[in-house]
Image (cartoon, rainbow, N blue to C red; front, side, top):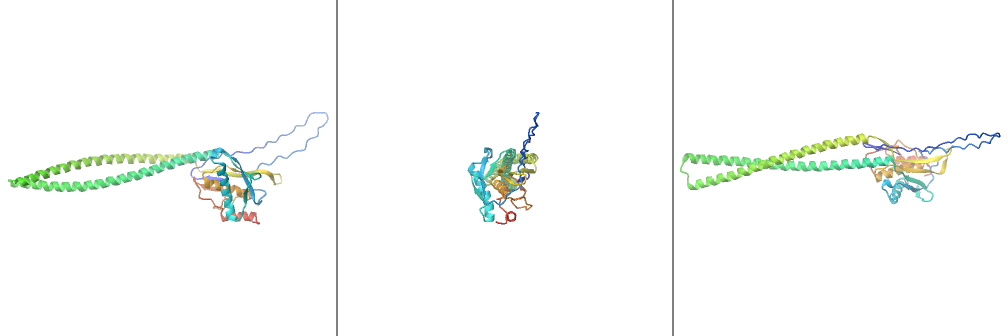
Length: 335
């Protein structure tokens, strides 16, 4: 199964099986030495579908689990059981059976594929965590901006009222100064009003200074957030360059065959090579189990047996589609 990752992908490093043939040179002697019968080389493993399909129930066991995957053996077994259940539920048949003694080996093989995927997921997690922090700070700054806007509106109302009050007071003082002979009671009232105006003016002046300081601090925070957003964009672009679009082999079914195409008994395996999460792991295993039943790839865009699956760090819950079932029943009419 090939896994296509958008927009961040791991670069696959595919291991090859190499078989060497050795030629025998004739011995130098006076009497000819009979040449031994020629032996046919074992053909390389075939990575397509099984040459002996529909052998139900298909027995399996987890034969290898590299520790770098971070899975316990129990978790690996559950993943295979869940993947098998996808086929069982879709067909209404028990197609697979765990058998530690003679089952099809399933090997979790850790190499550069999973290592690159883990690094990609780590960097993606950092990228998304930074994006969450940016969103939180953006919301906080927006709330601060709204509070400052409300404070400024209140200040403007109080300033307007102060100016109107001050104007009325100045008119009254001007009138009494013009008329002269100000009663003591009126004079005391004018002086008290003048003191209240001075107090209000000092308070308004201090509030204006505080609002100006808060406005400058808000502007600085908005500028800082803008730099964070620019850095986040640059980080995303860098991740896209390092983990660009591409394909990586997530799993494979291999079996050795004789020259006439028959499967060699006990010479087949499923390799799990790369997965992002539990849903993706079930999809990888279900796909390779399909090959073990004799199924090849399909062009059906929603089928488990599609050659490539486009993923972006997480998958939807996998399910065996009707197209998969039709493919299986065409291959195994007895189902």
